[in-house]
Image (cartoon, rainbow over all chains, first blue to last red; front, side):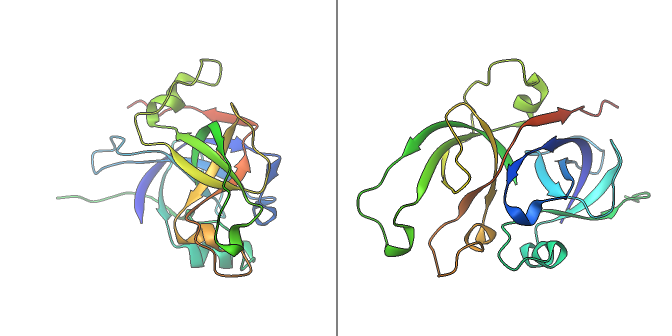
Length: 89
Length: 101
């Protein structure tokens, strides 16, 4: 699981049928200080995260398949939570 | 899923039986810099290594696609298939607005 920031979304007409109707969100993994770290990932979003909101993304494919309701879906990244605040020493 | 530009295709002559008839694309994956360029600027080659992805959607050279890496890439297949990157979406439009503190 990564802490990430929502930085955009994308539209795709032609996609795997299991992704039909799902928001595809560009999530930039960030570090403690909120600086970008690593490559943006596109995740499905069951929660409705807003622009520039901090979220937790998970790479658990099993959970993503359960969420989209298709055992043969290639979905992998999913927004699992929207962050209120983080506490760091 | 990550985004990438299709920069070529691969054809195979001998493959494992489960991959006969498959279509393959060579992908140059987007880095953060590519997102920031916007969709009008020409997409340069990525510093990240290019990869070959399985394609059942019909992506063409120059298009932007979303590809899935890892175990999940083999999930759409009925039989065990040695695939670890698959085309998941042909991207029409990317809306990107980077966060500046």
